[in-house]
Image 1 (cartoon, rainbow, N blue to C red):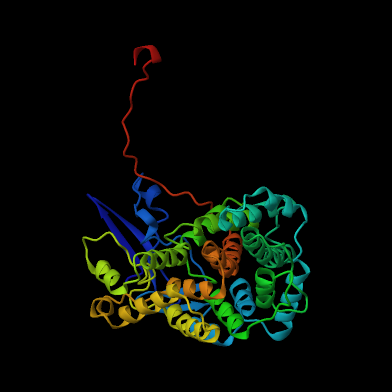
Image 2 (cartoon, rainbow, N blue to C red):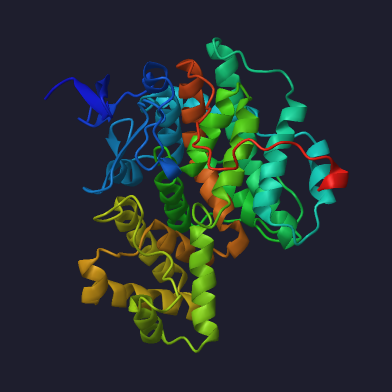
Length: 428
């Protein structure tokens, strides 16, 4: 294969080099197109075919159902590693040894206390505020309590910023939930692991001894691992673009949270539960709704099935389905919403219409089921997604800054009015 591409526009042709990734992906490097052609650009709404960067963090092959972090398969990471190990690998490039992991965890715990004035900000939110709005605001507020910018050329300063956000973010996540639940704001314990502290801060009641359920802990660990990174999606691209202006880590992550909030992105698992609630309200007839999903003239959309990137299967869904079964079996919950979810799952896995189109339940479907079974409010589902995605955002921001990528500045094709003469207001 040639190492260049030729673009023919009218009588003119332009040559551009090809870039080949380590997994044999091919890209045409068109960064000189506008200059060489004196004004021609490419247009790609939604950037579906546009590579915004070169990255060594995550490899995704939607056709083959492959997802790897730093070369490690998602299957092995989910079944053999802890979330904190995966976070370390994403951020620093390799899985840690025991000493590195212990130091990382110890340093995170040393930064896991939030300035008391943050509680005043939380108090200002109404109880019915959406926790994603609270989380985005509190993350942005961390900048006010840590005003000095990070020198990205200093490994020490970068590391300090990383452990600081890894330590404080779970506290903000838990406090966002406890605000809407009307529970006192609490902290974790230095004697507990990262996931155990997340659970303690979220679920501990002031009048009860808190106990860790190992099956729920394992499921939560897996869920966060599966959400830890996913290549250049909407929120990750947002973090990189905002960071490309040399905005700080906390501000860039706050922007990523806002991007994640949308129902087409992180809000999908919340949309699954809202769909299940509406099916229940209509009598719970799953066969009726499967028929509606197959009817092209029906506006009903089956949430939590299929994936825009994975054209075969979502490798994360296979892993989390097992965790969902374990959680539901262990807790023995009698919940009609979960019964509806299981009925939809079984019908989709056996219905030729869905099987032929590979419209399998995805990670959003199963994560919503698990979070509901754990007793996490529906509005908190996307917040939990953000907690899992945090190390991916950190890794992407860090990579972008260390590679000294230019500020993000897309072009456009103007389709508005041509020049118009200004008319004074009295003559309009």
